[in-house]
Length: 333
Length: 75
Image (spheres, rainbow over the protein chains, first blue to last red):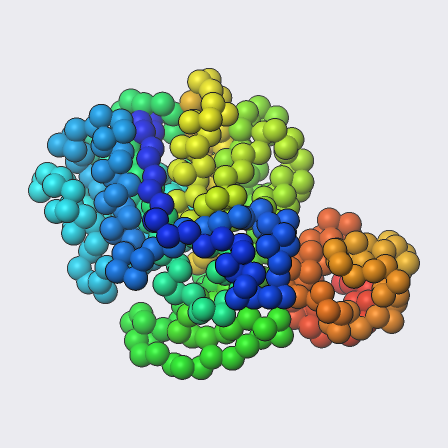
């Protein structure tokens, strides 16, 4: 059975943080330097009382209204986030109720970072191909802004909050091809919030500043940038090769590359390393930032809107995320 | 890659620091522009131009550009 992406919509919170605002907080960086190095001009952040599930509900409502989708047709909900409303229960169940979806649906949370949409899409495809569902609503939403220390120059510059809603079905605009996956928990320590989970529930209040003046604390999001860079250099080329092999295509036959939108630095690195022509590599972080698990659906949505994606195109998407967890898929539009 | 070429490539990763500041004995962590982004650029340059992999810890452990060059050559 063929499985398709039927529609995508996304939601960004109202509040915007510009480079000018960040340059005021971090005077060692100028507006121009942030833009030149990272390619991000602004990012959206949630309000104090706005959660990932609030954004996911907004993205889903947009999906239903923009594409004329009957919410009664949804028979499975996957909610990907690392910012659940509660330690328990499952946030997807709360979303089922808030969206007014049928109470006969499956509803699960998926805890993944930047690779989350790829994995959620693979699960949705599996559910449909296995005859267990017909219309899977895949919601991705993240609020890393709430995990970041106010003095965290690197992460506050890169990450933005946002959500996307992807409807996966037996018909649609893009046939979902074959996937490649990977996981390596050895890298967990390089992108982590150490406290708040079952392993260490209480705050540690152990804030120190590293050699570059960046805060390092068990209670906030910590990213070892150089290790994450090496992870990307190590894994992305082999991941791309594996997805291509599993879909029996060569890289030259890919019409558009829509990868996880980390930032301009990583985008250029991947593009040059894989010798991808600039016109075939889609970038969509300038006014959004890195929204973690929503970057690929947001980029696909924009590429469809601006006409970059045309019918008949083969599109390759890959994502490397914390965990470590990485994955890729080819889609035929 | 010769040491002189390495110094040149190293210097090219900096936007605001004049070339005259770079020589084999430059203590790169003392440069005003040294930071997390320049560290990423050095790692990327070493990967692309020398096909060698270095880490943030390696950059921290070395002091001069020549010391880093010798460390990479020995990998």
